[in-house]
Image 1 (cartoon, rainbow, N blue to C red):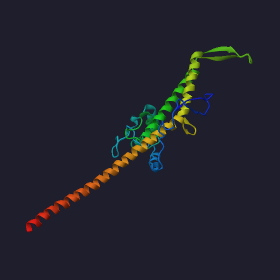
Image 2 (image 1 turned 180 degrees about the horizontal axis):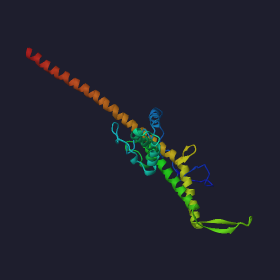
Image 3 (image 1 turned 120 degrees about the vertical axis):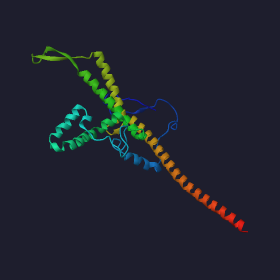
Amino acid sequence: MEITDNTSAPNDTVLVSSVEGYGTSTDAPSYDIAPEDQHHVDAVMRLDPFHDVLAPYDLPEGRSFGKLKLTALTPDLQGEVRQRLLSVPVDQREAMEEQFTADVIKRLRPSIRAMTGLSSEATPYHREMMALTREYSDAAKEFDRLSDELVAVAHHVTKVDPETGKAVAVPVYKVSAERRRAIEAEQHSLAIRMRLLHTDEGPGLEAAKRLKQAMFETVEARKEIARQIDENAEAKRRAAQINREDRINSQATRLAALNRNAT
């Protein structure tokens, strides 16, 4: 099944799926989570992808980048920190510079995370969340860029308002009529794309489908890790038992030899 737009207007909010092929309902996996695995889903959902999941630039626990300085920020953000430091006594500014810089980085963390992605240790679910966020953001930025192109003015011409008889400046836009139609068509496609990724109620049709599959893969990965942990623990238990049996057998062998020699 392919999700396509079959609404009548760009601002329609309802998208329905259209069937592009035939087959049984078992052709594609359902990615449903078994009730006994729901605790894995709950554990994943409790994680904050912006704060609890490592990014490529995060350091392991116990290590740090060192003392934060405002020079690590862009010039406009440096100005923001310097402005805050003006209200701090001079003898406290060095310490507060680190805190204010950290405050800015913390505030920007979601947008930084969206650009850099997550670490290789992130779950498939959180990686998919980040991919969807980036795709929606890219589509929205392109939509806005096209909107700016539509309203860009090349120059103004003076015309007489037939109602008032006064001269008014009328804008002449940079885009041609043909280019305007192309932009509007592209914006229509972008609007559809964004609705498939996100709606006011939450994830769009495509996003929900992708997140469901990613959650299934995440749960399966967690189950595999749990299996390996259980097997490792069982292997250690059995190894200890085997070693105990070996010690007992070795001691029994020595005792048997002593008994034979005694007779």
